[in-house]
Every structure is written in C-alpha cells, then in structure tokens.
Amino acid sequence: MTPIPFTTHYFADTLGNIYSTKGGRRFMKDRDIPILLTPQTQRNGYKTVNIVFNDKRKTMLIGYLILLTFVSDRPNKNYQCCHGKNGKNDNSLNNLSWKTTSQNNKEDKERDNTDMLGEKHFRSLFKNSDIPIIRQLHKQGKSNKEIAIIYNSHHSTISKIIRGRTWTHI
Image 1 (cartoon, one colour):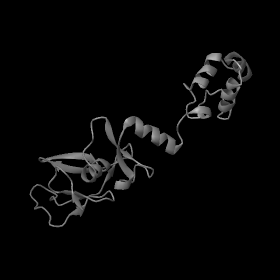
Image 2 (cartoon, rainbow, N blue to C red):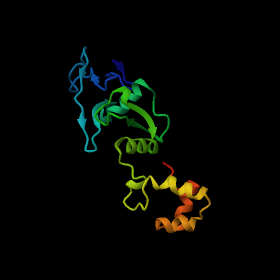
Image 3 (tube, rainbow, N blue to C red):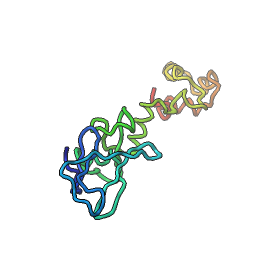
Image 4 (tube, one colour):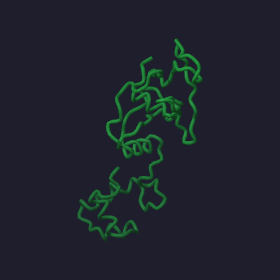
C-alpha cells in the first residue's frame, strides 16, 4: 500500500483498491490498521470512493487515485484517466493510463469494434475490398468519372478516396 498524494489517511495498491485509516465518524479515533473502502459504481459505470479532504467529503474516481498515486498527476487539463482493454471495472495500474479524450475514444472504439469506419457505416456505398480496386483503377489510367460510373457514385467521392482524404484506414 502506498499513500495517496495530498491525503493523510488514504492508501492505494496496484490492484485498484483504496484503503483508509480515518475514523468513521468525527468523534472516532483514527485506525491503526487500514480498512478496504467499498467502491460505489456510478451511473456511467466508473467506480468511486468517498475521501475526506479538509473535513469535507469528496467522491473521487478510483482510477484517477491509482494513477495519481503510482504514475503522476494529470499531465495537463486535456488528459483524463483511461481504462485499457479490461474495461471500466478494472482499476488496476496495468489497465490505466493518462490519455487525451480523442486518443481514448479512438482506442475504445477500435477495441470494442464500435467504430463506424468504412463499410460499417450505414450510408457507405463501398465495401472495404472496393477501395484497393478503385485506387488500382486510377493507377491504370481510368478517370475519376469512369470509376464513379462503375461504382454508381460521384467523381468527387472517388477523388477523395484516391487522394487519401477518406477511407484512410484501408
């Protein structure tokens, strides 16, 4: 167990557990042996614990406390505590990292297979296998309009595919 920075009675371990030596009530003496705090699960699925700072109770995300204790403070305001492949329920150190919102969302969508790229998008005119063929046809000298007629799309759409403005994941 390692003391959580900026607190006097709270400790964390690398498995994602938070402990306290603080007495349960104002009039109770502080404990000699830390007890494991029971996490609460928020509506969004993240686990929290209540910690007392300056005689005021504050609800804190467990993942944030683990990163604060074992890694560092948040690099800057654009970073957030991110859970890895094991999801929200795993607050162990090896499942947590500081990342920007866009990094976190992109990796989560790829991991959970919820990204709407390419043929997964409901309005897609093409299959993933069409894109290399379109690029090859262009290399062979076909115009964007000729390729667009083959695929029943607009020539500007074909141009964006060829220039790498869309379908960049393929």
